[in-house]
Length: 377
Ligand code: SF4
Ligand code: FES
Image 1 (cartoon, rainbow, N blue to C red):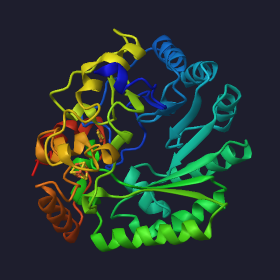
Image 2 (tube, rainbow, N blue to C red):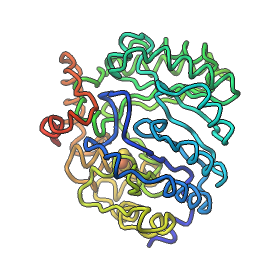
Image 3 (cartoon, helix red, strand yellow):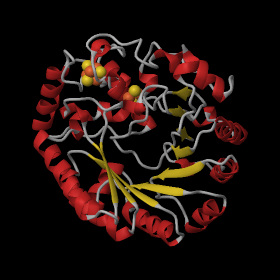
Image 4 (cartoon, rainbow, N blue to C red):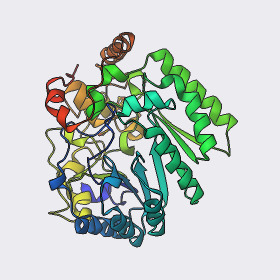
């Protein structure tokens, strides 16, 4: 079944270079069990991944983590991406990036930088990320990016502890000269799933933030592109997660596992191939994990006989797993899912209570985090 379902190469690849990160945000979608540094791919292995990606016809590589600048060989990886003809996007928290290093990365072919801001209020931002002094460093890096002529995306991870500042995020992106602003309502995977009660906004706050963005989009046409990822716990239809499983995207973990999405390791029935053992193209075309939910044959009802199944692909497999304990179920974000009512009620109930304390994303908190993991519905 595979050849006809994946005749096209993926458009994008997320390369999670490391799970090391100077920040400790509780909304992080990295898995709770963070990858150890001594298991990370070597420079040569990442260089080979970039070459293979270029040969396959992948167009863009998003260099992420953790914090990708924690890799001392980021320079070599970017050179390899550039030589392979990949458009490279550095997704960074920007707190440790120095100007001369950024200049060097640009010379080596870096094409785009995306910087996350935990809030526009410095004090709150630095509490959320657990990194004092972060805001000024981020502002400095954002200005260097624009000075160096690179396109800048401001990433705004939105949740109940900063949702009141969506308007000010828009002002900040304009003031910095960003090309794009990503109003990314937190999606509940990994550490964010664990911290959901600290993060989930009310339905009313969510709707207000969406209205605000829609008005700003109109007002700022030609000045700033605003992308928005909405929290699907309050949706009626699910997001077409990853644009469909195994359809246009692949994710490489720091240890070289190749995943159809960043949260796929939360599905225990799947086994993932590694770039250390198999070629990237072979994994894309033939691996069991990529073929598990390709197309529509795997679907159960109500998706199987639904008119939208080629549009949203049944939503998100990882959310179906987290909320219903079966990744083949309809994503409960869909109003046709038998779990939908319970999911909305849960979201509203959590949002109505005071926010819980963050469990910060930190290797020292992994054991505690495993014990407090959220249960499915
Ligand atoms: Fe999409 Fe499945 Fe819901 Fe239909 S039933 S709208 S295919 S998630
Ligand atoms: Fe894995 Fe949506 S995050 S399919």
